[in-house]
Length: 562
Image 1 (cartoon, one colour):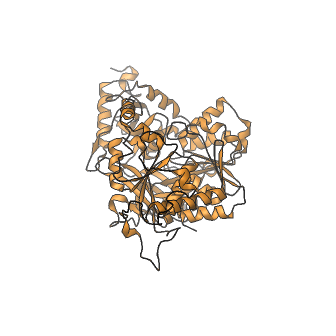
Image 2: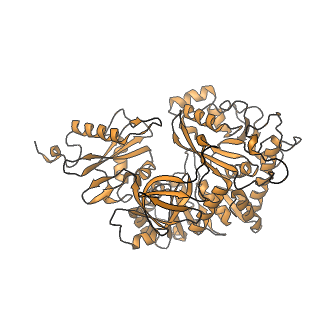
Image 3: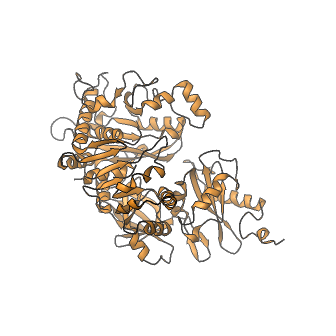
């Protein structure tokens, strides 16, 4: 079954009474209760006026309520639009304008923090929050958490929504305000093909913003079918099964756990947007499956080295994704968890996932002579081909397209920009198209490493660039943008540069380790879409190096030459 919500509800209906679906701290939610809340929430939303095709701007922290609300929205025929409040008020507003939501779902704490006095305080500390109560004019509001000052009048609390009490007395499908949906063309006529609870695989379900500027935000649109196919492949490829305890804070991993009938355990988040590595420690003893990004896994291994925990031997599968998973990290994981299977996930927002690999098989195979990184086996819902070395994807797991291009220009295939080798259905990553540096006999592809560095604590973004050394090789310079106190221009002495440099050995290939780490405040950009201008950045770094003789190892000045 490829439909996202239908797959989850089918697993819930099949689960034995008392089986836990979601665990968060001392709270737990059984499968039967999960199914009941999703169905009741969807019916409440329809009574309140959510029409098929309506979009919901979604800013609710990860946890049981967020999962139930997201599934309820999709089950009612709506679309979840994930929004990052840390993006800044201007970009947040541009994204909201493009998505054109009729609904806003937000934490009551965000409403409070975005009121005028507190918003000024947050801005003084570097957080530019949007005014949630007014960011979408005439929006209907859903509130997570207790009522707090700043919460819009009439905002519906999730407790009433999930109990099926919200909107009673309102005819399903008709808004209490009497407004009609701005996406009425998404609702088929009554009769054959008419929408019913559960919807169709082709219905829009999720919008995820990936990049862009205030002028041209970029967002990927997934359907219920593309998500259902991709996440079903994820569950099968990782080997998720009923009775397992899956530890992760990632929605795109937890939902496959629910599809498989497993228990999804959330680590505590605190005030951070993602769970810190420390949050996993106390939960590892009871975990069968652990999923984290590579940078979080690196930090977790360092914590375990300082504070060994024998009970972690129970972990049977460790899965990693969100950035390239390279051999040095796999070696360290295997050393610490010798009995665990290691799964590596290669994917992107447009296709979740593309391929799933076996980390132990990677260790048993000699490194590729071309410097490639084995990504694994292409999943069943994806069709892959190679053209001029570039990976091109299609199939039922592919997103519908980019929001600004729809409905006129849906995606029929996705040109990834990744250079690959495809042997049957086995995929090896070779880097990014046109981005490559040479160091001795090794080709270094920055696209294999930049996402990994960008996932390190304190790093907002990262670019690996090269400075020619005069004999045809490149000296590698990693340039990072700190999340806090970025310098103006380049700074080799910023506190983050030493932290990042110390974190890289054992995380990325030794032959690709940078000769120098610099911090800066922004990249040079060019073109209508204001993309990173790699050539300009390389020239700027080269100019900085010329003004700082000896800063780069291998400089004549560093060797005492005149």
